Image: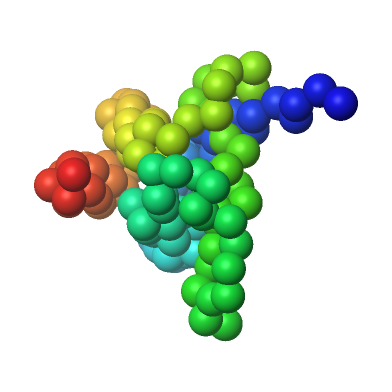
Length: 125
């Protein structure tokens, strides 16, 4: 049986990345950050470099887990690329968010928040 292609994480997240940068509604921006991007970036930061160590395990009831997603993702758009390591995925998501914030259509307040997140996450590396 052939191996399943990797999921192109940035391509899948692109609509949400664009929305988080362009939405004029702060509630939408805050909800996307609190329910999608912050938990995902945290999971990618905590993920082991060895993807085999990140299989879903027991967790707290309100702690989201993305190990199953992380294990099958790549950075490219086609899904034919090799699976990426968690730190590569994290940097890729942050870069995509930075690029969306740099777009002229991004809302200024969202741009500042995304740039602040990018700086904070870069300091953590």
